[in-house]
Image (cartoon, rainbow, N blue to C red; front, top):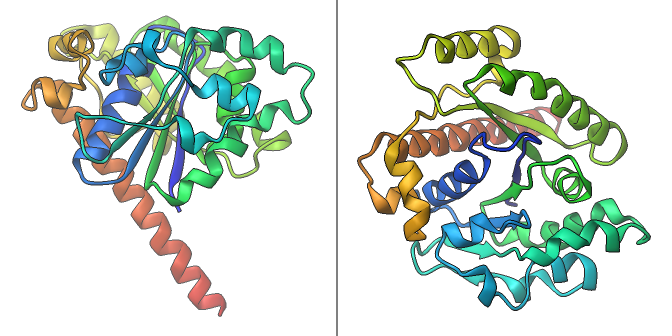
Length: 269
């Protein structure tokens, strides 16, 4: 059964889409069957793996609003053999209004993605920079959430709000939802502020913070313009190595959790 991980933060510009694309690509490079779900109307994750959003006929929008089978909209990327995409489209902007009167409107993405979990090891959802209905759908569908936090002061202010939203989702819509980890992004070793933010986040959130920190990196910024993840743009860049380390950290954590769960079940039996 695949793990569904949402990458979410209502604040824009924190490296959310960059993290979703490059984490998914790194997991695929490690030969885990991975589905990247673009749940952002800007469709940057779609273009970031080589597809033109204008050419997309059916997207996650049709899946959630019109009930099209999710299996029918999945696209195989030509860049990595183990990486598939569920694309987005600008139409997704109107989905929140169109879904408002639908029954169980918060569970439309869950209905689409949970049946796919058997085909993949990981499903990574790139959320839009808001706490609207689409993001609520993503958090209701997910088993866990990664929260990217830019190494700047204002990034810390929005963190409490998002954690509060996660608690509400846990209590009302998705008891399974866990915090996979807080991911520090855009770290600049030369800036004292970056180091202060890292210390502050680690002090307050301790075990929730990933060991891997994503640095500011030119190659990470360049790769979307080529429609490829950074691992294919420059595999030896700091950005590429960091996302591979993050992928390994997530795999290790989930393998350990699975092992603990099996041990507990054996003991109970």
